Image 1 (cartoon, rainbow over the protein chains, first blue to last red):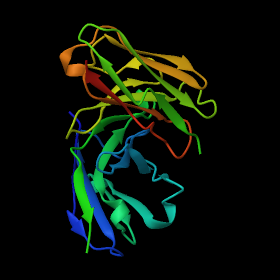
Image 2: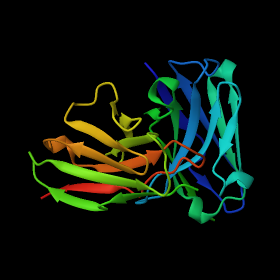
Image 3: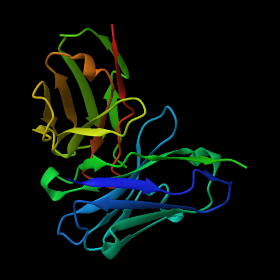
Image 4: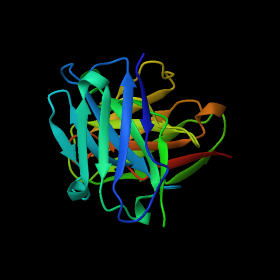
Length: 121
Length: 107
C-alpha cells in the first residue's frame, strides 16, 4: 500500500524560503518509471502542478515557478523535498505530494493528505 | 504551455442522472489525459488515466473517452457520493496542467 505524507511549516513570512518534505512508503524511488510530484491548491481554487522528480533523478519544474523551486530526493530515507524561495502571500495554498507510476501512464495515482501553508507577516 | 479548459465550470444534477464533463486541450495531447475527483477538504483521487483506463477501485459508472484535443468524463448514473469537484489534467508535456475544475452539485 502506497502512502505519502507532507510535512513542513504552516506559516511562513513573505520573502522567506519554504521547505516541505514528502515522506512516503510502499514504493521505492529507485524503481524504474517511478516519480514523486508536488501540486498545490490555493483556497477555493484549482490545482497547480509544481515539480516532479523521477527515479533516475530527472527533474521537471513548472516554467512559471522554475526560478524559485528546487526538488530533491533521498532514496534511502524515502523522502522528497521541495524548496520554494521568496514566498509571497499569493503562495498561500495546500501543498500536496503525489506518486507517479509508469503503470498508470504517469498519472498521479496516490496523493498525500496535503499541508496548508499560509504566507503572512 | 498547453492549456486545458473544462466545461461546464459547475453543474447541477440529480441522483441517477447521466452526466458528461468535457475537457479541451489547446493542442493535441494524444491520449495523455487524466481525471481526478476531489471532495471538500480532501486530496484529489485519480479516477481515469490515459483517457479511458479506469483506476483500480473506481466504480464502473465512471468512464472516459476522447483523443487529440477533446475528452469527456461520463458518470452513467449519479450516486450521492459523486457530488464533488472534477479536474482533468494533461500529462503530455511540461507543465502538466490541470483544468479549472467542474463542481458537480445536487439539484
